[in-house]
Amino acid sequence: MNEAVTVVIPRTRPTAEGHCEALGGDTETEGARAGGWPRQHECPWYTDVAAGLPAPTTTSSKSVVRGGAMSFTHRYLLPLLAHAWPLLLSTGLALLLAMLLMRRRRRHDDTRGQETTRAAAKRVIDLGGVGDKEEEDDTSDMVSPLHREDVPHVPFEHTRMTVEESQRRAEEFYHLMNQRRSLRFFSHDPVPRRLVETLVRTAGTAPSGAHTEPWSFVAVSDAEIKEQIRAIVEDEEEINYTKRMGKQWVKDLKAFKTTWTKEYLTEAPWVLLIFKQPYTPLPDGRKINHYYHEISTALSCGILLAAIQNAGLVTLTSTPLNCGPALRTLLTRPAHEKLLLLLPLGYPAKGATVPGISRKPLHEILDTM
Ligand SMILES: Cc1cc2nc3c(=O)[nH]c(=O)nc-3n(C[C@H](O)[C@H](O)[C@H](O)COP(=O)(O)O)c2cc1C
Figure 1 (spheres, rainbow, N blue to C red):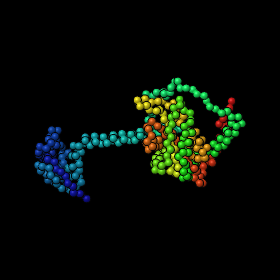
Figure 2: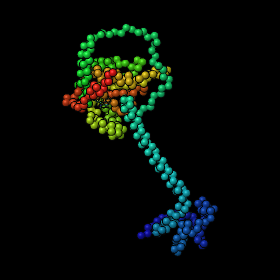
Figure 3: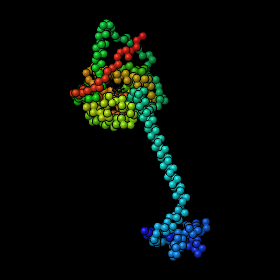
């Protein structure tokens, strides 16, 4: 069935010779005149003329209704294509080019994302810490720790024990530490602030490279801040588990039944966040270098874990991947500090369970010669 279509007649008309002829001075027709008049098949109404229909003799653009899809094609589409093909072609090519560039960019981003993930995972495995994707600190203007060279050396206080006493105490301590477990279920029972202070004071006794003491501890008991910490950690951990960590890592964690839900962050009365400080910024812009800041802070954390165990409390050594910057901002810590560990601290929940794992025997971890 033919459809009625509306076409705009340009300011031209057919000639007896079958050419199109300009009727006015409109730019398009003037352009056509300059390049010679269009041939019959290019003329918008040639089909009508050929079919014996009266050709329009209008001298201005106007709308007319004509029957037939054929005449629409010849009147409207073909002339449009004849005039506009360079524009259409270049637009099409530009679109195609844009699509190709976008696809390449997407692929590049995906690869970069994977690389960043792999790099973050590698950093976690190699160095510990939370593997945050942060810029490495600028190490220019680094100065050595500013200790006085003439620092006085004082007598060392030491009480010598008998070997038997040492053995007894060592075994006692071993049994105490062998009961230490990473807890993921906490009771709401409170822990006094003074006790937390003593534990952190003990952690601060750790040795550090050139005595730089490159650590800071943030102890949070405020329920609202703990909620915010939990929200940050759970959001990131969901991405860690589903995207960043990879199948093998997630599989390795199956035995521990860990997920990205971290109830303990709001259940435990305290959450301790331990930051390492790669340097101390000086007011004049220089930085005091903290040699071995990572190892030093980790040693301090080890002593903290022992102190927690000794005090009859429990904790979980946790390293929430990629949460460092957000947690640092939440806790208003300076930019040069990097989160190393996050420890919920308190008492175990009633009926709490732990994975039934065992430790390597001595002969596997000790070589004496
Ligand atoms: C550096 C380090 C990072 C850890 N990170 C996490 C963690 O992010 N989440 C978690 O549930 N446990 C974490 N753990 C706890 C270990 O899974 C746990 O220490 C191990 O399974 C041995 O169990 P145990 O501590 O009860 O002896 C971490 C432990 C260490 C030493």
